[in-house]
Length: 427
Image 1: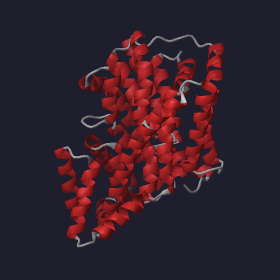
Image 2: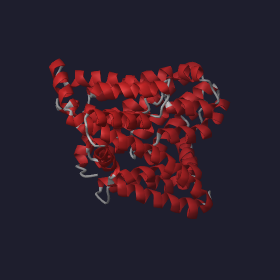
Image 3: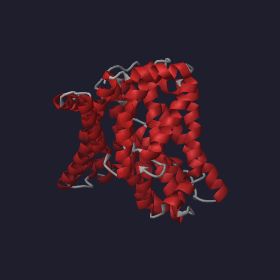
Image 4: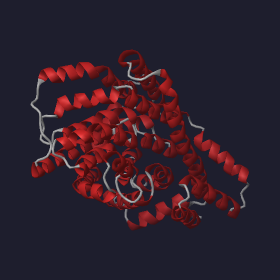
């Protein structure tokens, strides 16, 4: 059954069929071969999307839309400039720090690439960065947005593996910051070599003015993260609170977009949410078929026969996910691979919360690699550079991300200590 599923899936990819439809075709074929009524398939697909935590996805997507159009993102970038603009690399450091702020609110790598790239790339080219270099920094920093909470991939992982989304969110904070520091160090080195990125003198009065302009926007991550840690609400309820707050400060305080513009934001949110839910519905059916055919249990037994060393197993799984990221977008890869791989790693004592963060990071790297890297294509469009130019400029940053990945595999406590310390429970 596993080979039938994989065969149909890769045939769909080769034919250019949307992955959601490929999963649907695979589900129908598997049902017919198993002599199972198609009504069971419909029941399982409904079960897959009948989940309260899934409501967090459209709310966080809409928060990102409001941020981009309501002046929140711009103020956060100005604060980042006042905070780290004096570090060698200039606006390159600002772009990465801004992505850390932006990622702490939107949860979408693609939104981060588009929003920060449009604001930063023109200014960076005036500071001595080439267009590919400026685009590379803004594109690669978008991976931070799917690790620092909120994170749409972590929500999906929590749903398909029945892992606490709140704990996943808290676990993503330290790795997200570590990724940001790794990219900033790389930018520092590259700017030193290439003499790009003019620095500005640090001025406390400028920082204070930027903080006063952006402090209301900084309350957003406090609402999301602080509310979850404090037990005030779940991740889903945090998404609603973040949306209401972002709408209030954008419409009432900042007044940088009109209520009429909200309709277009709702349409874009609905389209993206519909794509995610269709994928999840069919992936749930596939996971059910594989489970009743004992595929996960068989995979666990076979992998345990190869190795039971957690470090070696995680290296193997990381290599597999990196290969998957080359040919599949993050969302379908997460909903397809997470139910199959999680039992394998947990069988050797790996914390599922730790694995969820690790998996999101690895598949996030796939967003930056050809031939199907979504953020790569968005970066090319925003920066007006070719794919070849952008990939070449990103090579040092690929190396930095892989170094951080090895560190996270070697020291899993970096990921798990904060959720264990806060003792967050539930979704």
